[in-house]
Length: 274
Length: 274
Image (cartoon, one colour):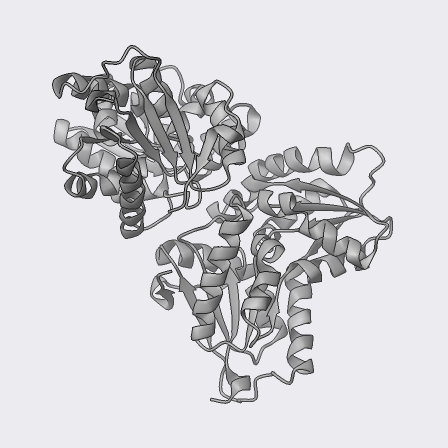
């Protein structure tokens, strides 16, 4: 197998990154993928930066041993604290996160220059979106809010309906509608779990606020990088897509089916130890 | 320090076990405690039995090294799968879980012999409550339900109000009121997080259903064991209570304050690596 025909590694703390994988599979129909969910140690969103860096490096090294040609960190929390240390530790392959593409999409979407961000506690505490957005445009106004419960709702498979809307409203009302001198026209879904709740989020946010998720923009960034580095897959054999989890493959398969939109069975999930 | 004056170790995957610690501190005002929350690797409720056993043994060994005279597994998930292997691995100290005391309390509370249990996915899948209850009384009828989202609500500090009641109702209505030939008069809170939501749970369950939590009954079982094995603390110096976490002490202190009912600050939480 030529180097270009090797798969792209996609890593997340659990199942949320499957929204990014779904976009990658749509935008890059000829590429193969290995997805690894660190389900034994999720969620990363409530852990300290040091712990997240250590866990992310372990999982990345496992994927490198499996022969990936590129690594996508499909987890906002891990991207926010571990991207640079990973790029240093793995100079042999390109490593791409979801924060910068998400920040670029936010800048493209906003007209008022007022941007709201929802994410896990870890991502918000770290301030990664604020930094990435301000690097592109220094004069925007940004407000962020940790919405930890949305992760649990997404994983429980409660994706719409009254309860989801009530939880979303409790988080979003103060952020979007009751912050003085802040009139956002753009809401960044700064956690890869959140796109599965986007119908409820859009309903509460209202029609004047554009939702931005980093899945599509990350897929476009990956496509561009593959072309630029001449890494696109050459083989005309069907592409492969392999799934690995560090724990509980039955649960992974059940939730992955909801996130990907096609059925995965438990015995398609490889169990790996870290 | 004499052996009797050593602290009792209390272990949980995170903060939920603090409801058990609170009961222990009330029932045993002269005993010292070390509480360890494995916050880096929580939640245990969605992990496989092997992983839970491995993690629980590591944390127990750390507490043994700190010189505990007894260990309380204040986590239903860990008690359900790891109690026996822990008792084998640590023959030098008594190890007590929360499942058996909870099962005994359920048998004492029920008149109809119909018992409902809510717990994490891991505890329900494992069937530990059913086994423990049936060991005490073989002819009862038991139905269980995994209520994973209640853990996230408890940790987010959303303990009552409309959203909590709606989530509780979505889980409890089918279990308590719409299961054919099942008329429970007793609901076991089979996760140490759930007692902080008990007002909402009682409201949805209705006045004819008795809530049973294992915190008080576990504290009584510990008191009995201390007496029987002549392990009660002798010193008349004030008792100590030490807190350890494997990650994110700031978050631990914030949630612990809500669970314990008195203020803990971040610098009272020791950070340990596992």
